[in-house]
Image (cartoon, rainbow, N blue to C red; front, top):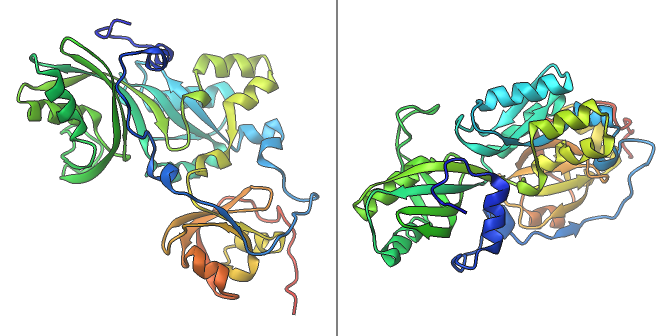
Length: 353
């Protein structure tokens, strides 16, 4: 693969990464949520009533289209807003939303939420991002020094957003989780970087160049991961259009994922059927309504509340740790900040004396 090539297809890059014998021994390519060793802890076993709700993977296609997520492989040229608008027109929807704006020339993963699922993209704003970047070094540099300098950025770094950016221009800290050098050819470097959301890769390349004292610039960028979404679930607009117009349900179910796919990276709590409707009406979640939880939950963590069928009920900040939830018999655990499940999806149960 010619590393100086301007238009790099994502599949070619990923294939090159897997096959290349020149690739360096890579560091652990994981986001913080993947490093957490979470286990499911059962407080009290229970089963959900089959008459109510539905396994997210078995939702009717019509419902999935208005309550799903698509990982679009954004092409070069259109803005992120234009790509989201194309999705809306293809599916005949009233509104869609997207998470993590990509510049027009940047390609790759753009998460598009459909109709009633649009609010869930906020949960991805702080999720990790991964990119494959082609960087040009402005003068010859010793390869060992180049690698040492690049690897020195795997830490918390300070960045000043570019003058043309959507955020206030002030210094802010962002963390680089990993960098894997895929190929070096002359003064061009192809590398993979996993980073905290809000990291400017163009600025990262500039800073690498400054530390090398020769200058460097980004010439190509592809986003390959957004939180729990990766290239395995990425589809093009053409694939979506073809599947929808041919009414190919099998393909549409591959392309459109349940809303729950957007919260896989967050710690979880599962609740009894009896507690669901009150939470949907805005009530706090107390310990008696909880069936099981994930370990490693800390106070003030953003957590997900699910039914025993794994349906998304709400999100909110935890008021207790996992240890406290298991130990205590009463107390408020979550005050919902966003409720996703429609009211009356599950029946209202009378409280037992």
